[in-house]
Length: 115
Image (tube, rainbow, N blue to C red; front, side, top):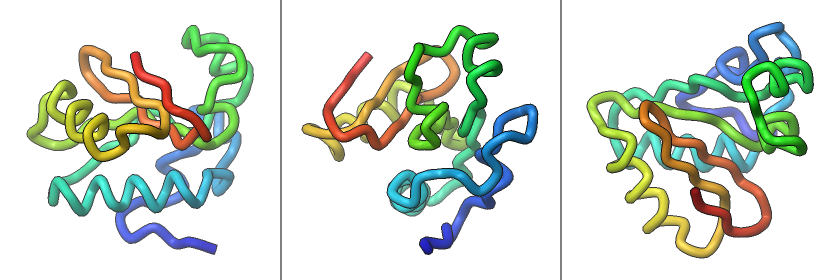
């Protein structure tokens, strides 16, 4: 079992407490690599979601958050566009990466997706 260098499992659980410790090891490894690259704090604003919470926030049906393979993140001192550009360059042909006004969505789905 992979133990993250920078993140604690509780950072990923749904706001209702669902999914504690149920996060993809690959997601944790990639987030550790992202944190190491930037060298500053990375905050998970949304990680694992239960179906009810995902619906309440307008999440997509079949969301990667529900699967425990996604995190919405903010990188200290970096604009979301800068984070998105780094991720898009680093993971050119894989994963899901979405740019939003205040955060970046990152997931480890098995194909490439961008928005």
